[in-house]
Image: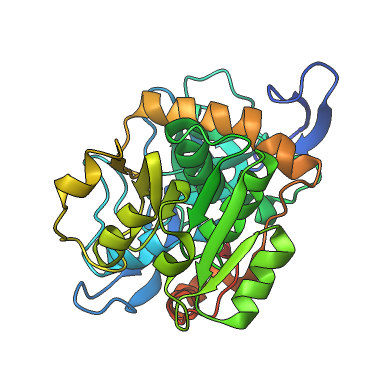
Length: 353
């Protein structure tokens, strides 16, 4: 681990993200500790048993940098992990947290500059004072965005782009159905889909959430508690982005148009369902399940690069606006999880470190 002087100098740094001439002064902090504070689940059987404890600072592997975390995003995957349903991939940190933002404290064997502010796509480890990040999973702060705001858009930006942009190749003239339109992924996906020229249908469980979806550009609003989305959309959707899973599988297939694509990114409605191949084959349907966390480093690096190239400009020019619902202190991670579980959150939650 790198050690920095007791009286750190002011360094003029160059950002690799913004091209020549983009410089700022950063005061490097001393990195002398081997311990840090992090959220630890103390009881595997109790998902809210999240306590701030002292743990070891992660040791860097080749190609990684150490980031001093200032903010960490809260995602449903974090809650699933506390339930034992979404474990980190082999070799990843056991600490919760799939996205963060902060400042590089140790550049390891990479060409990155200490002091550079970055967003981080993580397989784990964000709910902590420091996190080790593969260099291909570092993102710039979108111009005009704070560190806290960036921590709220990394995971959702990469998730939405990898599915709508890369897997579905969503484009102008298509119709996309987004389930959970009022949540963090949904509100972001609506805006990206509109920026790509698609017509957007959404499902949500309250008039308040549907109104928010309308404000973000959604064209067709469906309250799933009062309406059957199949009645509204049968045979008309080119792409469906689904966080529900098994519960919606049959109806989703019936909503797809010919050559339609169903992308399942969540299992809130169960994991097992039966597929009628007789309905699938004549319409040449595609059903694809994806997850971001378990992808290998090369895949993640490509997704990050595509997100920075395509989605970050949408954030910077206002075509996509992040929806930061609330910020909690790191020590209150359990409260943040309770809030996210309540179904009342519109947008994303962040932990301030």
